[in-house]
Length: 151
Image 1 (cartoon, helix red, strand yellow):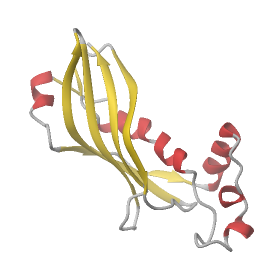
Image 2 (tube, rainbow, N blue to C red; image 1 turned 90 degrees about the vertical axis):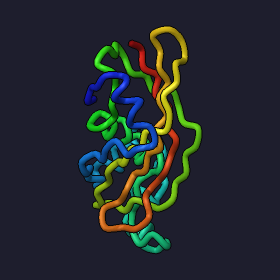
Image 3 (cartoon, helix red, strand yellow; image 1 turned 180 degrees about the horizontal axis):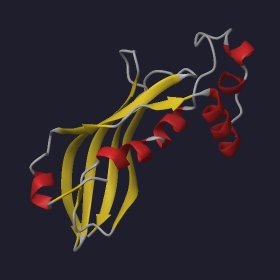
Image 4 (spheres, helix red, strand yellow; image 1 turned 135 degrees about the vertical axis):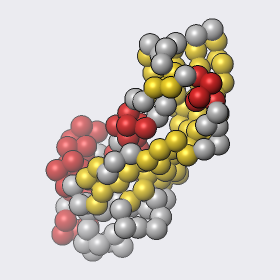
């Protein structure tokens, strides 16, 4: 994760702080996620049956798209240069807005919404995040993501 002084991070409140690189969501990744989560619904794994749905083919699990945020954040989320550990603290809101079709690429767009002192040596950051789908108007999802930083 990129580092900055805490005052520099606070100065970015309300601003977009970055966009990650693209990540390919291919059928192999979708199948591996299905196995790991035991969510083997046909819309994710069976191209013939999935082709008969409004999706027109297999799609990624919404939770797969959500889980990729960790990798995306590692590229762009600013943390203080004194951080010892960053912990996923949860989400206040998640909305799945559009399916990610197999073979598409996604990326994360991050806006810093707030920085709160939670306890001594602990900061709680809230980011508005969108997982964008290449060449599509609607994002796959939007969320308010909380990260706890131990400094």
